[in-house]
Image (cartoon, rainbow, N blue to C red; front, side):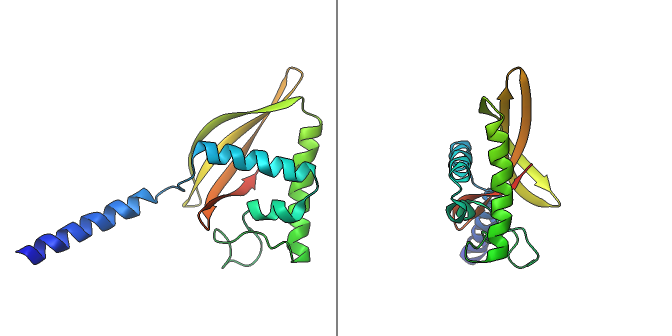
Length: 145
C-alpha cells in the first residue's frame, strides 16, 4: 500500500513540475530589463554582447529554441547586426518607448512570453512584439517584430 501511495505521489509531483514549465519562467521585470539592455547594446554597436541576449533562429534546427547566436561565427554576427540596426533605426526616429502587455503566447506549438514595446514619435505610436524564451536559465529574445 505504501508503494502505491509513493508511486501516486511521484506521478502527481511529476505532473506539477511539468506544468510549471509550460511557459518560459521569465518575469515581466526580467523581460523589460532584457529589452532595455539589448536596445542599449544595439545603440552602442556592441553586437558581440547583444548576441548573448538573442536566441538563435538560423538553419541549424538542433540549436533553435536552445542556443544563443554565436558572436564568433561571422554569419551569425551579421544576423545580430541586422536585428540591431532595425532596433537602432526605430529608436532613432522615436522620441521614447514604453512597455505594454506582457503575456503568454503559443506559436507553432512552442510557448513564449511576449512583451509589447510601444515606440512614440510625436502623436504616432508604433507597437512591436518581443518574444522571449529561456535559454541557460536566462531570458533570451527570440523574435523582435
